[in-house]
Length: 459
Image 1 (tube, rainbow, N blue to C red):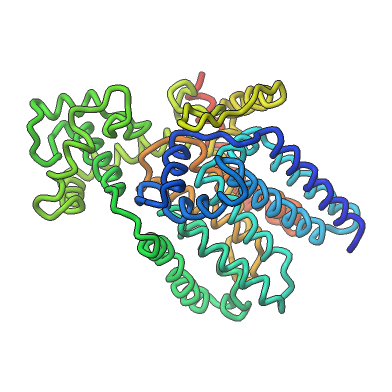
Image 2 (cartoon, rainbow, N blue to C red):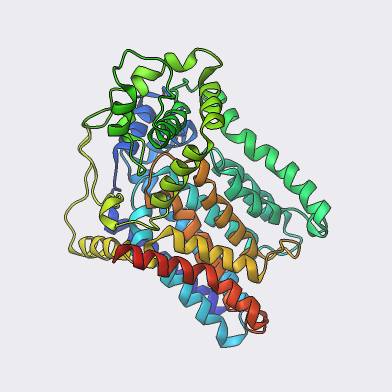
């Protein structure tokens, strides 16, 4: 093994070990607490991914609490990072290969990423799985079908973790296919359709195999959209309930930040919400019938609601005090799992909180950067992993435009990681610097516009 690659491996191992020790045994938020309870009982519902509950239960042989899942997330994250460092060094010429390797290391050490990986989250597990799978494909030789098969299986497993996983996984999965299947646009389109099938089926099949109970999680999006349509149209579009003045109640409950007031766990749940609407939504043509009727009757109100929420979701035209911060400590839990005090971790938390107020912490900027990268190199035909990552990050980021119900940076962890790696590898190419000036200007325009608009909004 070449000495530079051996140095990278040792450095990554040390960083992973330090990361694990610093966040041991792992931050547990309310989501993780609920998931761990189901992992212990072996009885799952589908509010959070049952596949993760099952996995956590299997990891219980290594110890109780969040520590085994923390180790898995760190192994995936730093394993994938190490593979991408290796790929970046191979793509470089001589000593020049060290610059992208160092930049990838800096991205991996982002305080925001360190905290997210140190927190037991399906988003962190998902991002780690995609990092590992894409890294395997980035270093795999053309005939290494076993590595490509392993990467494909990891991607299909990752698709069991998020309902909107397909846009993120599909561009990467296409890299696992033979080059001939991507050579022309018709072949690429046909391959994409076929590759999407296992990704689409992964989540429902996993839920069925694990006998997960229906929780009604899909109603959260329907209820939030109905609330948003009602707020911007001034019309009651909910099914009939016993709540007086539903328009006024909804106006007081709706927030473009999240749907939490409609849920049952908030400090002041809305008079119209999940519990009151669960049964009425089953009347008529069902929840999607109510949703479709409201969208068709008030398309502008629906668009206003979705754009307003997407803006908060991306931390774009907002004030930083109006959007959620990172979870920096474990929430109270029945098992008493918590992190001991640490001055280093406190420093990381302060740095992450500050970064969220800068363009480096705005998902909107990373999404704009991804768009710019696709302006430079849009084609997947040559199988460049950097292009696949750019497509993956951009498509996944935009999937939250129609499908999101909350605004937290963790939802965009994969977009930030994927676009960051793609940017390092793309901008390090000689061909990028040789591109026509008009194309370079067009590629830079989305980031410049987002940064300027975001800064002005915060003044």
